[in-house]
Image (cartoon, rainbow, N blue to C red; front, side, top):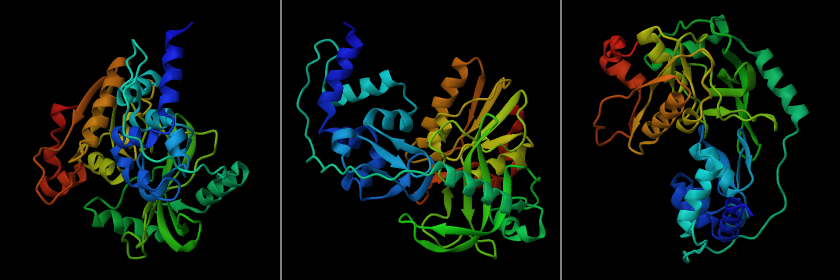
Length: 357
């Protein structure tokens, strides 16, 4: 009989009723969702926002959760694999370690368990046919950034310290009247928005939106940056926003504005990967020989961790990887520094292109 299968069953059985404790340790960014599974909505730990993710009500038993954009993660193993970029054996080993299970003896030491949460069979489902029409309609209603009506986007980028006259990439568009709904689906209003096409390979996955005001500020809503849902057969993980065609060298960064800062300072093709977690799981295009990772410097080390994970994966694929991180230390009142901050504070010379090209 397969020893790995036995270990898997042992760990799965041990985790039932203890998943909240395990997740609390292995995924501390889910702390607020863990406090009230099924009811407490938090920002997606992969791509951000304020209210797109929640754990299932039976999370202590299943360990699962769902993001409106990334889809459902049915159990704790798939949730950790998604969050950390782990393989199943890596997730299994981490959970076993938290439970005190020895891979040799299959014995476990008791851990402090939270009270199991009542199971609720009800779950939301995405109508793929309807969603496909919505995504297509939103994109068809959008206009190029150079369009006269797209002034809110140009003002917004300029207010962030960027060149407002960015190239007319097919992946960045302007929507004049994008509807904003809260987590409960209630229509809050309509806003101008910068749209970004999220792609994996040559396949469109979904649309990222930055909600704005007419005078180019972020809209005063709970989540001014939000991704639309993806079809149930498409995963957001591994995707990117393609700003130009990759050649031998490709640069990547977390946010859209950060990527634009790198592009403005270096002139190199730079793709935003949306978040630190998505950075760690980015699918490197074929033909890329060198990957320059412009990571954020933050107190949680999430950016550093994600950059290192991506660099390791790149090297395993035979791709040269270079990590560029802003110099620390962080000021006491600052949570993070990205390369847009560097551009605004130190100018393009701080990007030291010669050292990484």
